[in-house]
Amino acid sequence: MGNAKSSAVSKEILEDLKLSTKFTETEITQWYESFQKSCPSGRITPKEFEVIYSRFFPESNAQTYAQHVFRSFDTNDDGTLDFKEYIIALHLTSTGKTTRKLEWAFSLFDVDKNGYITKSEVTEICSAIFKLIPKDKQAELPNDENTPEKRANKLWTFFEKEDNERIAEGEFIKGVMDNEDALRLIQYEPANK
Image (cartoon, rainbow, N blue to C red; front, side, top):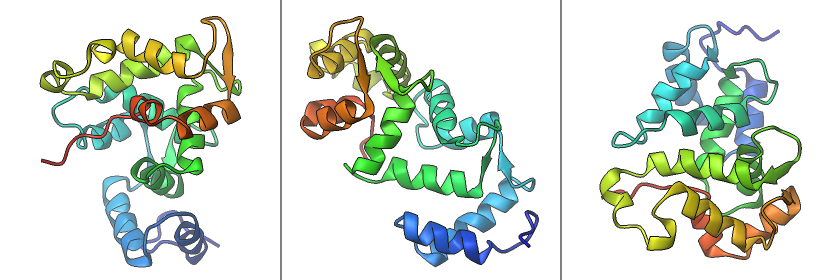
Protein backbone atom coordinates (compact mmCIF):
# COMPACT_ATOMS: atom_id res chain seq x y z
CA MET A 1 0.00 0.00 0.00
CA GLY A 2 0.99 3.70 0.10
CA ASN A 3 4.17 4.62 1.90
CA ALA A 4 4.11 8.11 3.47
CA LYS A 5 7.90 8.30 3.15
CA SER A 6 7.90 7.42 -0.55
CA SER A 7 9.71 9.83 -2.85
CA ALA A 8 6.85 9.75 -5.38
CA VAL A 9 3.25 10.79 -4.90
CA SER A 10 0.90 7.81 -5.06
CA LYS A 11 -1.05 7.31 -8.29
CA GLU A 12 -4.31 7.41 -6.32
CA ILE A 13 -3.55 10.81 -4.76
CA LEU A 14 -2.13 12.11 -8.04
CA GLU A 15 -5.27 11.15 -9.99
CA ASP A 16 -7.55 12.51 -7.26
CA LEU A 17 -5.71 15.86 -7.19
CA LYS A 18 -5.69 16.14 -10.99
CA LEU A 19 -9.46 15.71 -10.97
CA SER A 20 -10.16 18.07 -8.06
CA THR A 21 -7.66 20.87 -8.79
CA LYS A 22 -6.45 22.90 -11.75
CA PHE A 23 -2.90 21.57 -11.31
CA THR A 24 -1.15 19.36 -13.87
CA GLU A 25 0.57 16.08 -13.06
CA THR A 26 3.95 17.81 -13.42
CA GLU A 27 2.93 20.61 -11.04
CA ILE A 28 1.57 18.16 -8.46
CA THR A 29 4.75 16.08 -8.66
CA GLN A 30 6.90 19.19 -8.23
CA TRP A 31 4.78 20.35 -5.27
CA TYR A 32 5.11 16.87 -3.75
CA GLU A 33 8.90 16.86 -4.03
CA SER A 34 9.05 20.29 -2.42
CA PHE A 35 6.55 19.21 0.25
CA GLN A 36 8.63 16.13 1.09
CA LYS A 37 11.81 18.24 1.43
CA SER A 38 10.10 20.79 3.65
CA CYS A 39 8.04 18.26 5.60
CA PRO A 40 9.81 14.89 5.69
CA SER A 41 7.18 13.61 8.12
CA GLY A 42 4.57 14.05 5.38
CA ARG A 43 2.60 16.49 7.54
CA ILE A 44 2.60 20.26 8.05
CA THR A 45 2.10 21.65 11.52
CA PRO A 46 0.26 24.93 12.13
CA LYS A 47 3.59 26.73 12.77
CA GLU A 48 5.13 25.40 9.54
CA PHE A 49 2.01 26.46 7.65
CA GLU A 50 2.25 29.98 9.10
CA VAL A 51 5.84 30.26 7.85
CA ILE A 52 4.88 29.05 4.37
CA TYR A 53 1.78 31.26 4.22
CA SER A 54 3.63 34.38 5.40
CA ARG A 55 5.87 34.15 2.32
CA PHE A 56 2.84 35.14 0.23
CA PHE A 57 2.35 38.27 2.36
CA PRO A 58 5.88 39.50 3.15
CA GLU A 59 4.77 43.05 4.01
CA SER A 60 1.93 41.96 6.28
CA ASN A 61 1.12 40.00 9.42
CA ALA A 62 -0.34 36.76 8.05
CA GLN A 63 -0.14 34.73 11.27
CA THR A 64 -3.78 35.01 12.41
CA TYR A 65 -5.20 34.50 8.92
CA ALA A 66 -2.89 31.52 8.36
CA GLN A 67 -4.21 29.94 11.57
CA HIS A 68 -7.78 30.26 10.30
CA VAL A 69 -6.85 28.94 6.84
CA PHE A 70 -5.07 25.99 8.47
CA ARG A 71 -8.13 25.21 10.63
CA SER A 72 -10.42 25.32 7.61
CA PHE A 73 -8.26 22.83 5.66
CA ASP A 74 -7.46 20.42 8.48
CA THR A 75 -10.49 18.41 7.40
CA ASN A 76 -9.81 15.46 9.71
CA ASP A 77 -9.04 17.73 12.72
CA ASP A 78 -5.74 15.98 13.48
CA GLY A 79 -3.80 19.24 13.91
CA THR A 80 -1.74 18.74 10.74
CA LEU A 81 -2.15 19.01 6.97
CA ASP A 82 -1.14 16.10 4.78
CA PHE A 83 -0.07 16.59 1.17
CA LYS A 84 -3.58 16.23 -0.24
CA GLU A 85 -5.08 18.75 2.22
CA TYR A 86 -2.19 21.12 1.44
CA ILE A 87 -2.66 20.98 -2.35
CA ILE A 88 -6.42 21.41 -2.07
CA ALA A 89 -5.76 24.44 0.15
CA LEU A 90 -3.44 25.90 -2.49
CA HIS A 91 -5.96 25.23 -5.23
CA LEU A 92 -8.99 26.68 -3.46
CA THR A 93 -7.21 29.79 -2.23
CA SER A 94 -5.77 30.54 -5.67
CA THR A 95 -8.85 30.03 -7.85
CA GLY A 96 -11.44 32.62 -8.82
CA LYS A 97 -15.09 33.14 -7.92
CA THR A 98 -16.37 29.60 -7.76
CA THR A 99 -18.96 27.91 -5.60
CA ARG A 100 -16.27 25.58 -4.29
CA LYS A 101 -14.06 28.49 -3.25
CA LEU A 102 -17.04 30.10 -1.53
CA GLU A 103 -17.80 26.84 0.28
CA TRP A 104 -14.23 26.98 1.57
CA ALA A 105 -14.63 30.68 2.47
CA PHE A 106 -17.73 29.76 4.46
CA SER A 107 -15.74 27.16 6.41
CA LEU A 108 -13.06 29.81 7.03
CA PHE A 109 -15.63 32.22 8.50
CA ASP A 110 -17.40 29.43 10.44
CA VAL A 111 -14.82 29.60 13.22
CA ASP A 112 -16.70 27.36 15.66
CA LYS A 113 -17.64 24.87 12.88
CA ASN A 114 -21.35 24.84 13.80
CA GLY A 115 -22.60 25.33 10.23
CA TYR A 116 -23.47 29.01 10.62
CA ILE A 117 -21.63 32.33 10.58
CA THR A 118 -22.28 35.01 13.19
CA LYS A 119 -21.34 38.67 13.07
CA SER A 120 -18.61 38.06 15.68
CA GLU A 121 -17.08 35.37 13.42
CA VAL A 122 -17.22 37.78 10.46
CA THR A 123 -15.45 40.39 12.61
CA GLU A 124 -12.79 37.86 13.69
CA ILE A 125 -11.97 36.83 10.10
CA CYS A 126 -12.18 40.41 8.79
CA SER A 127 -9.62 41.34 11.48
CA ALA A 128 -7.31 38.56 10.30
CA ILE A 129 -7.75 39.61 6.65
CA PHE A 130 -7.09 43.25 7.58
CA LYS A 131 -3.70 42.24 9.03
CA LEU A 132 -2.76 40.92 5.57
CA ILE A 133 -3.15 44.40 4.07
CA PRO A 134 0.13 46.36 4.24
CA LYS A 135 -0.08 49.57 6.30
CA ASP A 136 0.40 51.81 3.25
CA LYS A 137 -2.50 50.05 1.49
CA GLN A 138 -4.70 50.33 4.59
CA ALA A 139 -4.34 54.12 4.40
CA GLU A 140 -5.77 54.02 0.86
CA LEU A 141 -8.94 52.12 1.81
CA PRO A 142 -12.37 53.80 1.58
CA ASN A 143 -13.56 55.33 4.85
CA ASP A 144 -16.18 52.59 5.37
CA GLU A 145 -13.51 49.86 5.06
CA ASN A 146 -10.47 51.34 6.81
CA THR A 147 -10.76 49.27 10.02
CA PRO A 148 -11.54 45.58 10.52
CA GLU A 149 -14.79 46.49 12.31
CA LYS A 150 -15.96 48.75 9.46
CA ARG A 151 -15.17 46.02 6.92
CA ALA A 152 -17.08 43.46 9.00
CA ASN A 153 -20.07 45.82 9.37
CA LYS A 154 -20.10 46.53 5.63
CA LEU A 155 -19.93 42.83 4.79
CA TRP A 156 -22.64 41.96 7.32
CA THR A 157 -25.03 44.54 5.81
CA PHE A 158 -24.89 42.71 2.45
CA PHE A 159 -26.65 39.77 4.12
CA GLU A 160 -29.42 41.95 5.59
CA LYS A 161 -29.12 40.33 9.01
CA GLU A 162 -29.49 41.77 12.50
CA ASP A 163 -26.34 41.68 14.64
CA ASN A 164 -27.65 38.70 16.65
CA GLU A 165 -28.70 36.62 13.62
CA ARG A 166 -26.61 34.09 11.71
CA ILE A 167 -25.95 33.09 8.10
CA ALA A 168 -26.19 29.57 6.66
CA GLU A 169 -23.80 28.38 3.96
CA GLY A 170 -26.27 28.75 1.08
CA GLU A 171 -27.11 32.33 2.11
CA PHE A 172 -23.42 33.15 2.35
CA ILE A 173 -22.60 31.75 -1.10
CA LYS A 174 -25.59 33.45 -2.74
CA GLY A 175 -24.87 36.77 -1.01
CA VAL A 176 -21.24 36.80 -2.10
CA MET A 177 -22.00 35.59 -5.64
CA ASP A 178 -24.58 38.37 -6.01
CA ASN A 179 -22.31 41.15 -4.78
CA GLU A 180 -18.80 41.99 -6.03
CA ASP A 181 -18.12 44.17 -2.97
CA ALA A 182 -18.91 41.25 -0.66
CA LEU A 183 -16.56 39.04 -2.68
CA ARG A 184 -13.81 41.64 -2.37
CA LEU A 185 -14.34 42.01 1.39
CA ILE A 186 -13.99 38.29 2.18
CA GLN A 187 -10.43 38.18 0.80
CA TYR A 188 -7.26 40.13 0.28
CA GLU A 189 -5.24 39.65 -2.86
CA PRO A 190 -1.99 41.61 -2.97
CA ALA A 191 -1.39 43.51 -6.19
CA ASN A 192 1.34 41.92 -8.31
CA LYS A 193 3.21 45.11 -9.08
